Image (cartoon, rainbow, N blue to C red; front, side, top):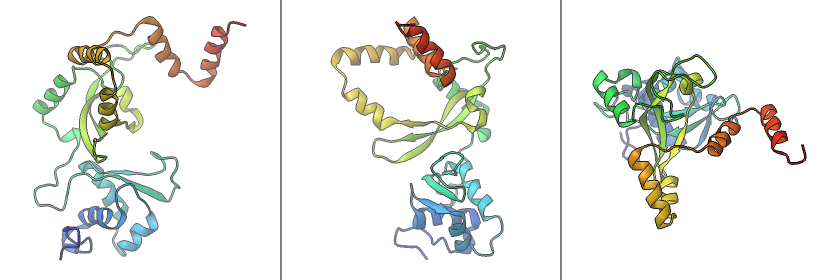
Length: 231
């Protein structure tokens, strides 16, 4: 029996635990809302490993944060952040996972991304500054906030260092488009040139600013001391 949203009932056991958990998130919890482990287990009494089945949804583009991703959450809380693939629909349960990509599709994504990491800009085989480690590129998933406020998970090229520890970035397309509309004609022309080239050279002071921002506080304090006219 379908509910008032036109979706199957999350209580229909014929769908399996993962699909029922997805429907429970959509129809009972809601995107952006917090729920507890106790709520989840109460909703699925006697169902073993329901926590793991819910985590499996992440392979299908669903984003469910714990206090590791969102420090504002308590250890027993989770937040339903992004609704992914409608896994309960026949034929829709296809993993949004870089590991399932064909070699051809992987190459297409990397080619469109210019064969460099979209997080830090390093290219395949380049050496990271201050180290002997070379970059290896792969395909990662990134959450993108759309202009209407909805979220989707899209694939992007990222290097091995930026992927360490499961680092996640959220891109806000709506914010970018709003910012562009607020630019003057000359600023838009300059930006259009950077976009067309998909490249921009930073001058020395801009690069130093970027490097400064990446430093730990102890090191930033040393930089401020050097820049202090009274030092």
